[in-house]
Amino acid sequence: MTPAEKAEYIYDYYKWPIILTVIAVVIAVSSIVRAATKKNDALYLAAVNVSLGSRTEAILTEDFIRYEGLDEKRNQVYLYSALYLSEDPSEADHEYAYASRMKMMAAVNAERMDVFLMNREAYDLLSQGGYLAGLDEILPASLLEEAEAYLTENEVVIEDNKLDVLLDEAEERRTVTETSVNALRVSDLSLLAEAGFAGDVYFGVAVNSPRKDMAADYIRYITG
Image (cartoon, rainbow, N blue to C red):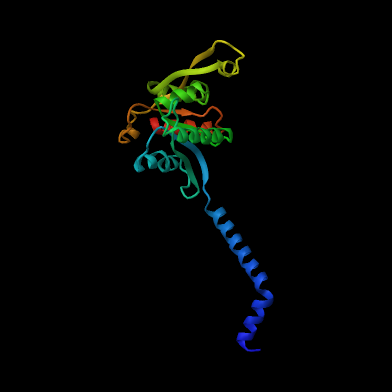
């Protein structure tokens, strides 16, 4: 057979085995490369109603990894950026606010949310919704003392019969709240002095975060 005839023969009888083999090799190589380059999420940070510039984002993510002494090629702070929460969003922002709320709830339920950077409106909503841990309950006394000047308290809803009222199972709305020291006001911290935030910005820890020790280190980092 001539070279052309051999090529035609191979194409006619071995085309699909060759194609499938090539596809399998490509998939295997891609999987190996992804596994080799995938970074461990050391911490999950959500920026809620807060806009971050590139330098501020680097301070809150890359610089913290260096502060922790972790390998930057293998570890990262996973950032949920541009989340938006509002009690009464405008018609144009309603869909965006709903999508942000669903994304945040899914991340919290999956324990892939550790700390929040938020404006006052988001802080109030997250606090009332029970998303923020009491800092006096999860931080060591020494760190609480160091961060005392920045500690902030807010209301947490303990009991609310809003659903009963909507279902006509109750006539009057009744809400029971308590106060909790569940955030730091971080607007004036030297680390974030050049961020250019509009208004006060707060920092809190997710109530069900499985990485509270890392969150405590993060508080040491931003207040240090």
